[in-house]
Length: 471
Ligand code: DUC
Ligand code: ZN
Ligand code: ZN
Image (cartoon, rainbow, N blue to C red; front, side, top):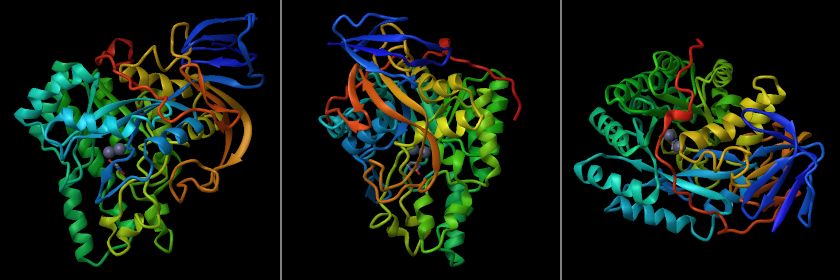
């Protein structure tokens, strides 16, 4: 079956130009001016941009966490992602509680199978790097095509890795051709601050932010950077929120260290004051790292623009306000950490980035699609519009104005972190491997049609390894 996308403006990380796109089966077969239909289904994209499908490098679907489980599973989460212009996600496979890594991966396949409406891969989330894990790791990476690991420096009681564990992860990743993703916050200091706050009778949501200061993120980011460098390895800092961390990444990159960084839409447009909302509503904005003082938003945009940070992940980790967030009604440390962002990641970056003059169109595509595809071994199959690439396309109306609301979103959660926010631009139709997932703003896909992606080993050949810009 052929499809011909006509009259749109193609935007990649490198170019912006008018051309038609011929899709044959799952792939882009031809790009050119005035391509003949020859029986293909014609999709008129007049007035629209054609972007490569978004690649979200950071999601937590159907994940047990903080004594509960996230509310979006692989069906609701991937459908919401597609409505938002994302056609590939990389989700974190929890490995604690399973005897072997292989078992953990199989469990994650079980969650996604038959449900995913877009393509997906896994990162391995590791809490320890004992000899058993070290021995099994290369095999799992090879067999499953999982070429990234995540290690936590936070969550003292559950996941926190000590320096030896981190160093071993960097070494193992280097040998196996994988990228180490690190959640950089000093978990021990945070644990002490939380204990002190609760002992002082401070139980409200705002104390979540006050006990996780930006210095704890800056310090951990610095330590992760130096440990990665000592191991002659590569580091991807997840969810960077503040100047303290950006500064460390900028300095490391200016020295040629192999360090990359991600931020998330919530840190670009929300700030710490949201945690002070009355009637416990502040709990809706509890995730880690926490929201920061507003001045950091500009720092993050500047870092994206300068290439100090390369990607935007959603850190989708949704918990209903009623029933889930309420678990921390009398103790902020019991509020499940996370929020619903998978659907709005793409459009918020377009609206706040391109429309407001913080980024150009090509930078937008680079951040939301191309760089994650390159860093995580999916480029050029994913992350661009090119002959031979998967036909993952977003037909995007760049002018329409709309208001984000839980009333109209597709995530399985009873609130929106961006409720009432006015944005410009919306995906109209979204194709994944040549098939409509969203057609004229309606779901047209099928749960289970998403394909598991075995990824290539980490290769920094196509990545910008160094930036010099100061922040
Ligand atoms: N932070 C969150 O808020 N949720 C999931 C994991 C994380 O690091
Ligand atoms: Zn994290
Ligand atoms: Zn996360």
